[in-house]
Every structure is written in C-alpha cells, then in structure tokens.
Amino acid sequence: MTEFLAALSDPNLPFFRYALLTGIFASLPFGVIGTFVVVRRISYIAGAIAHCVLGGIGLGLYLERGVGITWFGPMQGAVLVALLAAVVLALVSRYASQREDSVIGALWAVGMAAGLLFIARTPGYVDPMSYLFGNILLVSKEDFFFVLALDVVVLTLVGIFYNKFLAVCFDEEFARLRGVHTGWIYLLLLCLAALTIVLLVRVVGIVMVIALLTLPASVAGNFSKNIFQMMVLSVLFCASFVVLGLGASYSLDLPSGPVIIVIAAAVYLLVILSTRIKKFLF
Image (cartoon, rainbow, N blue to C red):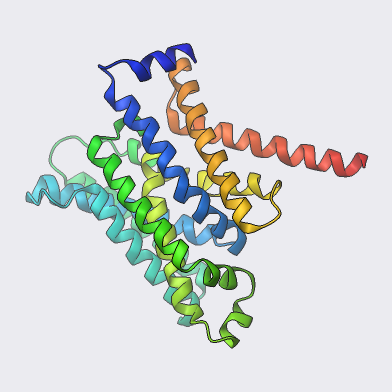
C-alpha cells in the first residue's frame, strides 16, 4: 500500500489520480442505482444493457477514427446504445408478446457481435480486452469530467423521482392504482441504470459490470434498515472496493478490474457466511 500512496503523489503519474477519483465518484451512482437494481431484481436486464454497450463503444471508435467524427467517441456511443437498449427492454417487458428472456438474450449477443464488428473495421489497433475486462488506469481527464457530468444527471433524477422509484420497486400494482405512471418510471429507472453501467465499464469492464453493480448493494442490504441507509452503505462499500482493488492490483502487478471484483465477492461471501453462522448460533 505504501507503493500505491507513492504512485498517487507522483506528479508523473496523473492518470493514477484520475483513476482513483473516477472510481470514487462513480461509486455514487453505482451504490444508488445498484440498490434499485437489487431491490427490483432486474440484474439480468442490467446485464443485457451492459453487453449492448460494446456495440456503442465499437460504433464510437469507428466513427471517430474511421469516419473522422471527432466529437463522437466510444463514451458517447456507449451512452447512446445503452439508452436505446434500456428503451427496447422496457418496451419488451411491458408490451411485447415475445418471451422476455429470448429478447434479452438476443440483445445481449447482438450488442457484443456488433461491437466487435465495428472494432474490426476501425483503422489502427484497438484492444477490446480493455473494454471487456476494464482498465481504469486508461481513464483520461476528459473521461473523469464526463463521469462527473453523468453523476450529476443520475443523482439529480434519483432525487426528483425517489419516492416513485421506491413505489415501482416494492409495489408496482399499488403505485399504478394510486395514479403513478409506472411504465415511464420503470423506463427512467432502466435509463439511469444504463448510464451507470457506462460508468462501470471503464472501471471493471463489460463482463464483470453486474458484479460491481450488485455486490456492494447486496452487502449493504445485510446492515440496513431502510433503502436510503442501504444506498449510503452501498456507496461506501463500492468506493472501498475500488480503492482497495486499485491498491492491491498496483502492489501485486495485476489487472485492476478483476482484483476489484474479487475483493467485492470475498466481502460478500464473508458477510453471508457470518450472517448464516450468527443465525445458526443464536
């Protein structure tokens, strides 16, 4: 950990400070939206959105490098496709006659395939592994401010629609009878989850995004008495996992994303085991 602190203070390593700050600030929407995802039990939908993001990343890279549209990069493409996937999945779950799981599986696969095809046609070398498994050390100053902007959007909308989100998560039918437009609220919740997933991709990658979206909230749920408390603890756990994962990965010379996930999973297992043991003994 001493080496990690030295790297943070090294003026020649600004990217390391951007990585740490991005992880900490991204933990805010991770914890908040992750709580809704866990409570509403829509992890599988969030997983489909996450894998569609690769299609947006590939599209952004192709348009930026191949076509010369410099203002539209991988992050902008990821946001666009993630929001489109959220809209499609919300409509499918509400109105389509097709099996929901089949549509989710199709979007999951097509998004990945389209992204790899766009990357293959992009001039120059593009390493898809950094997007699939994450590399927070590649975060730039522009990415950091992009994360801050998305933080503001996500947290502002959650603050405005907080009570309606709770109603949709816990008793959607009752909320509908009370006049709440649950369809639009559910769509908004999925769109916020999509924006949060875009932030997560830089931290742990597409493949492991669901773990960091759900594990901190699942851990926090064991120590919380209400949803707000669960959100606060989830944010703190998520930030802790990111900081510890970055420090451990730097000291051990390992990829940061997998280390963050392993730490989060280990804490989750310890909490579950301790809870089971406590119930068994008392």
